[in-house]
Length: 312
Image 1 (tube, helix red, strand yellow):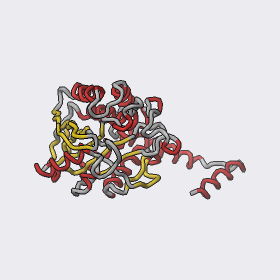
Image 2 (cartoon, helix red, strand yellow; image 1 turned 90 degrees about the vertical axis):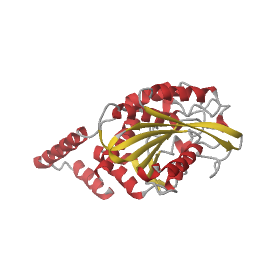
Image 3 (cartoon, helix red, strand yellow; image 1 turned 45 degrees about the vertical axis):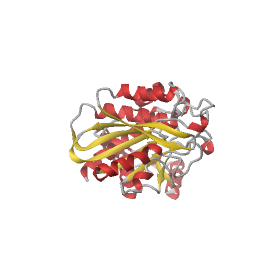
Image 4 (spheres, one colour; image 1 turned 180 degrees about the horizontal axis):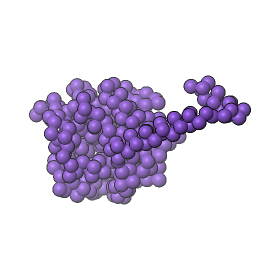
């Protein structure tokens, strides 16, 4: 492709005339692409960013803090007219027993099955003394899911039910390990396995750190390959594919307890936040690093993935 590009640039410098039919074909192709995108679901990244800003203004949200309680209240207020379940549990951590809260918001569909869209909402506990507000890490995808509800609310979903999941305790309390991380999703995966919910989940899509202005979503090799392929197809429908999967990673995240139980999962995460990931887990994770466009790209892609899943 580099050679073809160079050849095109070279002939342009030589003043080669472009045939009219080539220009016409390019215009038609661009028009068809735009029309196709216009017929796809359209996500409002600007509103998602506005929700993120309101949410992040709460301040640090580490477990047990006043900010954490305010974050819970904020989520309850957003979904006060929806089918919202608070999943409250107490678990042992390196800092002792802690009470945590997952929130599940259900939008029923006509098909028998569930698509779960998930994000964690708390901030890092070890960073509780540096005024770490987690604008991207936890904040941006909380805003994304709140705006996702606006798209789903009031509609008759002809496909699968869509559940929005806000997990607690994704961050390690001391040092990341299999037992000191993803507390909320570990608890819920066990609970849903016990009550039969896991068998009904057609896809578990985790959103994490997707507000970054310089969006670069890595392909997670711990995720389910066919589901990540479907997500890439969805992104391509909008022309957003250049923001996805250039690099590959193995991500430990809220999806793993579900991966280990055979649920099809995809972790959509941009773990390249600032130069050499300089903003991640620092006080520099602030609103000025985020963009509405990035949230639009993520939201569009997730909505189209849902549509493609309903067609399978």
